[in-house]
Image (tube, rainbow, N blue to C red; front, side, top):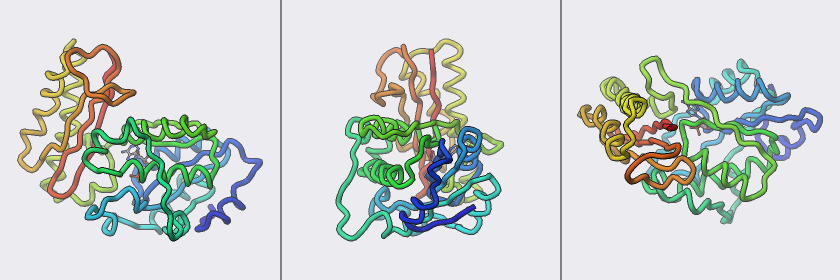
Length: 279
Ligand code: AMP
């Protein structure tokens, strides 16, 4: 496994003859969720490239950019064990030169849900993924359904900018009790960690109601909220039942596929989870 830190070295190492090239962008502090993306890429591609980059432009001032967990040696060992060929670990200046001012905005999908909670977040995400796609030139790129709005933004950005990349969405990997794997789970106290099972509990409750025939959007939202509201340390940032493509909030009855998504705060830590309900 080769580790490179400059765009020039990445371009030189990316073999032209190794198509298809699969790409897994990450912010590091890797867990089983990240590795599932690597496994999917490894199964489908001749060359697998991963990146580790904590992207400053997707963090607002006062968010956790400085204290975001980092452990590069451990990450590199995990990537090597998972069969990655090439890892790109650029310093910030490699992707954002002095005076950098260009941003990619996926207008219709960036201002609700996580975008309302974190203004500018998806501009940072779309911008860094566009830069990474430009440098790595992957045939296929792998993202987690765990960050469903991010996946939707990247799909639209790739299509709108005519980028020759197939975006592959992969299922959410969970801890044994149902909590979605996340680099930010390390921020949780033992008590918060125990109560965080309520996110997946809310999703499973809504899935059960949906399977039993419930189609009223407000009732489904209420069913999903109940297990979370029962946990004293949890505070719901938002809980949404939205059109799975457009991310617009559903009123009345559910007729097509919908994304049930939520952000829940435990102290300063905000956890995300979601599921898709299909009639
Ligand atoms: P991050 O390092 O948080 O930027 O995540 C890098 C990639 O891993 C993104 O495509 C995430 O959606 C994906 N990812 C994060 N957590 C999970 C998970 N629990 N299951 C599957 N994919 C995940």
